[in-house]
Image (cartoon, rainbow, N blue to C red):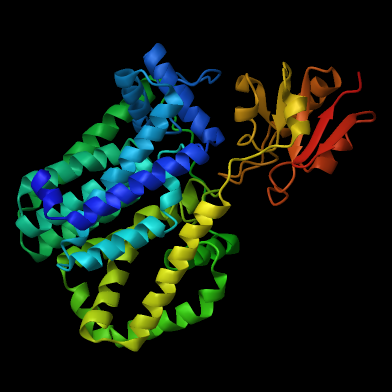
Length: 490
């Protein structure tokens, strides 16, 4: 390890810079939490106290909606250090960032000998829309670290054909599956790539089991535990609902953000034009790249993951989208291929088009990083909302459960306003009228209140504020800057 850093001083400099920046940022703006974040925390706490992956209040013995990897990581670090759970989350995110940077840098070494170019790529990735994921209490940062290690091992196997690398790549694929279910998309695409490589290079087909056995074993154990405790239910129904226009708009937006992230929509036309010209200038080089097995891995991951995500949206979860977060596994395929095209055009062809495009890309990434630092701030809620929730002991119905956990001492009182239909399956909610009536009765009898946040009008699966208010003859409504507080007149 010492020799590695001695030979890669640029990497050591970037790690030091990003360490300083990370802790300065965290000291100013704490790690961001969503409702999912609090679920991970509660699961981690239950793992430590009751040795079970169970969510308080849930009817399921094992919580299967999220795999256990991230919560286990939180529990493990907290158990070793005895630090508060939220501190453990922050340290896990930081350590994930360091591992991610080291292994992304090692991956670039398969393609570039120029350490300055590798350093430039690493800096751009740090400035990209990936970096904010290391400041959010979700499983993405652990996922990114594991993904870089796994991809490095696969590339190492492709170069050396040492099957221990393929076996360890399979182990890390198993860990990825236990961290995010989205990893099934990678398992699908990488398995297809291996089948292709084994066929083209006439390798022994049974040796592909070095890769497939670990993830199959890991997930089979997890599925077995769910099956014996939860009657085999994973909480999903298979119903056909193909992506709609909104999904494809989100896909275009996300693909554009791969090159020009954040606040730079003004670059759209020049970047797209320059990118098309770059592709045209590089058509012979692209043809030669496609024939290389290590490049084929990224292409399989890019296309295979998009096919997988489209299948998830079409059959399992219509509420999923092609947003940047869900497209993370495919993003690195683009980064590697795009950087090779730029390098070829700048260092070999010395194309003015490549210079112009790289200049715009670097500028947009830099602006994104500056925006992230200057305009990020802790969420500040209105004093009126804080006052209304202070010492609250009633159930609180809300149209979005992301915003309330950090404001309430007892977040078990939070309830979701009933959905008219399931946004995942698109099926109408057969219990909507009954659930709605229960909510209205609870408010009328002063057992519950409603906090309705503005800005979620496009969530048509949730009744609007006006639709809720018209059910009351007499009601007290207090408006605050984020929305409205609705309660019975005492």
